[in-house]
Image (cartoon, rainbow, N blue to C red; front, side, top):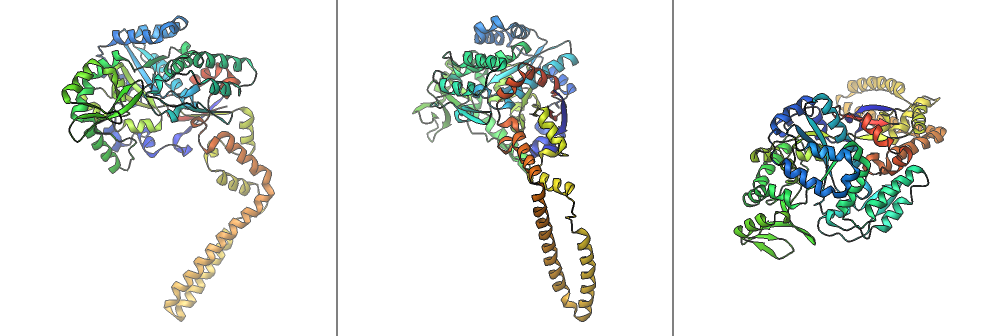
Length: 529
């Protein structure tokens, strides 16, 4: 593949807050720690050198992987490295989208793999393990139960229960069949079908199915996949749970931070609650609140705890307490020797709301690294683009804007009435002077006539442009088709399309090429063709 890079701001697709973070705007500096640079991550190593739970981490990971490790020697090597004090993780996280969901799921993981590789080259005395944190405790099933492939939406139509990672895939057969039937016939299609069917058609939980598929795609890169919905991990975090539920510390810290961000003109992404934990069992995941009687209540379940009962429950059953979006990042940083978190634009923005909370708990705040964002096309599409005198930068603009410019470049007629308006403007200057001599109060009336005429001239220009567009009908249709092809559903390709069509075209070279061309700390939008 060939690659070209453009600034994120030139895409018009990323938030003001993310762009300010990338530009290192001074007003945001108190909302994050070390900068996303090689030097910033080196400073993070010094903050994270003391990590006491390596033995437990390694044991838990090997237990989760089970028999998968026998076919994943690179993963085994990375897990074993985690026992050493000079080994750290770089982490990305995402929900358990079926069949990996939109392309950016893949982009996140490739970014974390490439970053770990680059850091090893920069600091060979240390080891860096790429980690994919599965959001197994998330319960927003409607966000993950579908994917789009070759323009078709595939949906796993089943009732949601509790945490999505605990759901059985026993009834996903129809969705798997629909997904695989779009692949066509080729060696790559057969390989992908085998991966999908092995992952999803063996009656596994969604967490285990996701691990199986992601591991098959990325095991040779040493990607370590973690499921934190485990008693062993929750025991490490139990003191944070108790303190936060009883004292509502994160609520106060994040509320204050969000207010400060909004004063600066940045929009908060998440709202902290007084209690930022759910009560989790196989059949439900429900919020914990403090009711009018001062008891801790699991909503919709009729379960309540006194303070003493809550402490006992957390001590004996920490696995029943599930952090929400506010406390999950801290949970991650407590159980991993982590240096950096790789996230999408919205994720990076909500992490900016969390630093004060990390500070009060004395947990090192990770370096925030926006994931690589990309558009992938082919030579034929690129050639069409260039033949129409368009560029990969200009194609991000609206179709109407591109069509108007195309007609103005190609037309044999002069559509701009600028010269005529300059002549009329001079005439109105004379008219206004004559009117003023007759009656000084007639000046505004002259200006009003001039304004109406200017509006009429502008309207006439648009009509000339519309009329001339008929002479370039085929070319303008091509612009529309290019926009639809490169921006499905009117947005970035990575936000809606699944990776399957690209894997079928490129096979295992797809991930190799992404890893080769992504530059995690350069912060450029990547276009591959």
